[in-house]
Image (cartoon, rainbow, N blue to C red; front, top):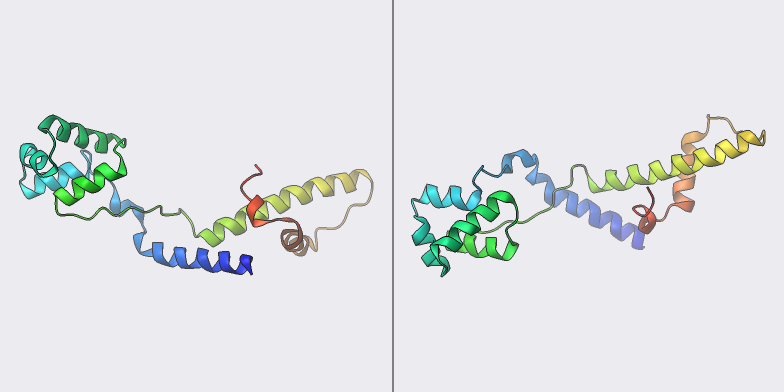
Length: 153
């Protein structure tokens, strides 16, 4: 049951995150989103700082930290509110989550079966490659636990 629930959870996340692709449409402007939006609104740094309740120097530091990727999420959220914006935060997988899990399970199975095959070859007990896909699927079903996928290299 847990396996099915995780599968469905991965599918739901993949569906929710699909509209965010391609992520290239969200490339951060060179000076950061805060600065870009503040400039587009025609808001000075002093006005922005007053809306945030901080000094202009702190507002400048905030913009620089966003541009360099070191800003705290809570600080960015407050800056967004001061600009009448909503901070949207997401991790967008490079491939479907279900594919990532399947590929990782398959890689582990192929690696482990390769070791077994090598040992069997040394003992002259080698099996043919005709049923390799079936052996891989069976190995995944019986030996590869989801929680262990990311422990092994």
